[in-house]
Image 1 (spheres, protein in one colour):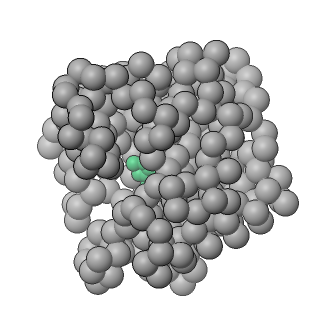
Image 2 (cartoon, helix red, strand yellow):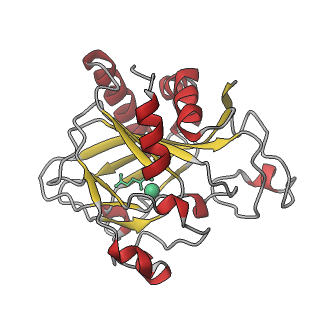
Length: 264
Ligand SMILES: O=C(O)CCC(=O)C(=O)O
Ligand SMILES: [Fe+2]
């Protein structure tokens, strides 16, 4: 796993709100990540393990944007080992410029054959903490191309975003109702050969195209929370028993819910 980044890559990330790291996984690691993720998703969809997925109604529009399986590290041992790797935390912390990184949630995102596009959105406003330094890693398990739904970004939007976003719905352009000034920013597509990691700030506008091919576009991702972040009142993926103990402003520092995977 190639988790070292250059000063230029850090500078690019800070300026644009995303960065593409080709060759992140070598071919052996790629096979292992693909196999582990597929197995964890298959188990989850078969009803094993705990946690969340969006396949309640497989015909629903959102279910055909991607198969979304959250918190696979909680239900699959091999996935847990992959996700708790301190090198991932150090990479995220280095790009974000923070001194500690906790897992917010992992999620597999498999855009199905002929799947719907992923409408423009911001991530951090969905989550139970508000931070300008939240960061996610998105690892391509298949070649992600302009044909099958690679990611697109609006560079620099992490600098002007507020904590307002839209749902990932039918209209690609809903986000521009909130941020009309972003319509003038040229989007940047990020084709990503399998094994590439793409990282983005939780406030960078992003989306993905439709999958016009008859093969899945699989990705394994993880969202990270800077250590020291506090509860903002949003439920998101927090377990009910933990939520019951929290009030707005409390530190989110429970290692069983949000593991601290790296600290300076
Ligand atoms: O994989 C996709 O289509 C969208 C990914 C995304 O929105 C994310 O990783 O935050
Ligand atoms: Fe997203």
